[in-house]
Amino acid sequence: MAFTAQDVKKLREMTNVGMMDCKKALTASDGDMDKAVEWLREKGLAAAAKKSGRIAAEGVVNAVVENGVGAIVEINAETDFASKSDKFMEFVNDVTSVILKDAPADMDALKACKYPGSDLTVEATLPEKILVIGENIQIRRFARFDTGVTVAYTHMGGRIGVLVNMEVEGIAADAVTELGKDICMQIASMNPSFRDKSDVAPEVLEKEKEIQLAVMANDPKMANKPEKVREGIVMGKLNKYYEENCLLQQAFVKENKISVEKHIEAVAKELGGSIKLVAFVRFEKGEGIEKKVDDFAAEVAAAAGLTK
View 1 (cartoon, rainbow, N blue to C red):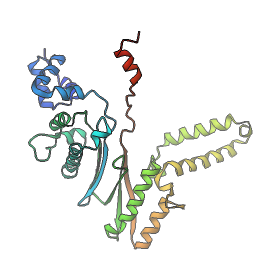
View 2: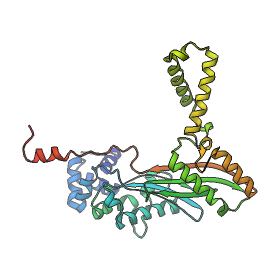
View 3: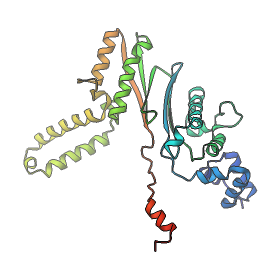
View 4: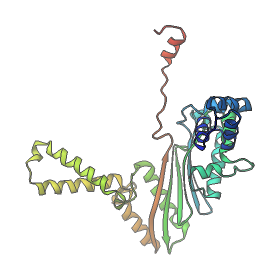
């Protein structure tokens, strides 16, 4: 039975085993997926294949800047205990160094990069790390900045990581480090959805406007007000939306009487140059991953034969 590139990809996703080994397994098993998994187990990758199906929602976010290049990566494991192990952190640091050095364009490119101190790729190394650490491990996402001035910040031992990228003119890079750290902490704390109000898509604003108009329509005190008045109230609500969701429009956490945007302008004026916040990335470990909740009592009852 023949197999396709899609079959290779599926086997790779099922097992976390390298692509070349997946191709060999499918070739040896004549395209049969179950037999291919067995073949991988026979070759010593059984534990990795078994563990790869388990939910990895713990882990760490690592954010660093080296030689002007910034990188941030989230790598997940199954338990907080494994996430704090030296072996896991060694893997995290090695993958971060690959992102810094090789500038991969996407996750496939990262996995195809050579792993530090090895002839294997990052992808081929991953199953070995799963075996050694004893848990499923996933490289979930990453980002990289190699222009301008980048500042990194890690909160609560890797629970949250932030990279801030700025365009700076007429000011030494090290002079804006404190500003960058302050903005990073703002992002970690306030979790803005957008950099600036100009980045908010028109459809998002239109939806927000619809919501606010619907709220007023259901409020007896507001429903009978003239349309122009209601429109004005909606615009005020949208400004509030910007202040809550857009970084530059948020109140600066260290001086909430001014916005982040105004604070950046003030620092730039004081230092005699210009500073533009170009982009930021905020990763929080496990966000969006549905965690398995074990019912220990039910497991014990099932083991004792007490369930029907």
